[in-house]
Length: 220
Image (cartoon, rainbow, N blue to C red):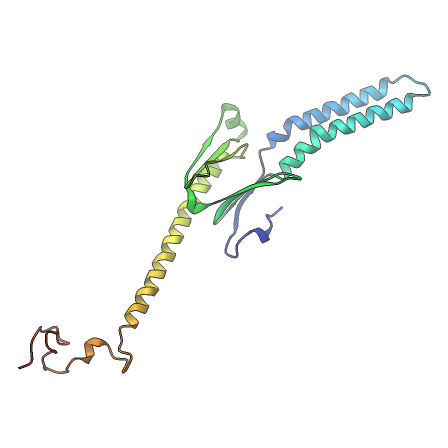
């Protein structure tokens, strides 16, 4: 599912949208299978009698409650946890009823690192830590799929963002310089100040330079 465009700026694009690694829901699925097996076995061994149907309903109800607690809640937490990397920032959102989130601009990221145990290297998962400028502390993303590639991607985007900002700054400076040179023309006759001096071989005004670079000279 694509990330909602309403949360993005006009010139912002999603580069990667991830959920936590599938291992975060592995044990809930195992527990679900065990619950289903136990419930099936319990319904099968209920002795025949007038209360057999009631006991089977009790077993099924207990199995449904355990399924909600052991499977549905972890699946919802997994599905509603988002790691979104865009061309401008990194977003983290988590929570079902109550939501938690943080946005980290690429320009504020000073260091990106990842950590993997031996098991996480096998399953291609890990923890990514973002160090940022300021007092907010590091942002730690756990159970990130292919954490090494994510770390490299964020580093690349940080460099590209820095280059983009440098080009924009250079463009602003160039526009400012062009406008400053344009304002040097005389408002009265739209003539550069240098051309307001005497033409030909006449010397420049007192203490000035003529248009040919000669001077300073003084009138006699």
